[in-house]
Image 1 (cartoon, rainbow, N blue to C red):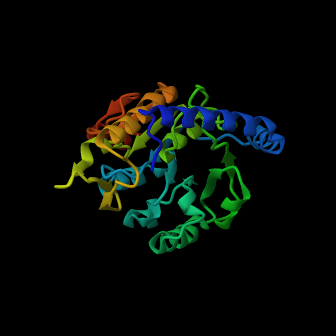
Image 2 (cartoon, rainbow, N blue to C red):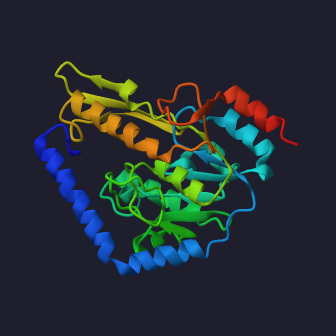
Length: 279
């Protein structure tokens, strides 16, 4: 069950968790030195534009094919289960980002199979693997770059070397990482993040989520995550609120339906035209 900060118990739990995060990061000198050294020695990208491909259903083969037309003009970062898209065989990213603990340890048989597919895909020599700090991620391959995945919502930090001040979402982290890599133009596609539109209740008020992705959809039982509709809506509202810390004029959200209101927006049609007109 996700912590419900609408309750006093939930608020206290979060405060204690943030205090623990700050303390553990303060005393973990090895982690701090590693991340400072890694980010100090990085060779920054030569291209000035990057496309972040998130997992939302608005990302489709038409967008992918247009990107491939001018592939040499962009770097691309994908995440999570992008490899399950049919187009992933043709549109191979420069970076692949993982951050979900399910990707390294899970009891779920289906997740294990997906992780095996992920590993085969990420082993491609053309792909730079990005992960949170820690050796456990090396089950995929040696990461090109790692970041601090601790969370401290009392902070405004988006620097990947320190605990993040925003919620744990791989798409959020991808934006922070691309800003840190100093890309001047960051386009994000498939970043729908419209979960509040997709919750439904059955006749017994049991909460379900229509979990839609570019590679498929499912109806998830969310009763183990949220104790009520209010809990679910407040959880996502907290995501949207802290996500404002990533606001940057460098980022453009390619969308018609996304509920993210932080960045400038561009329709898919305008994005496709923009790509076609690149010379």
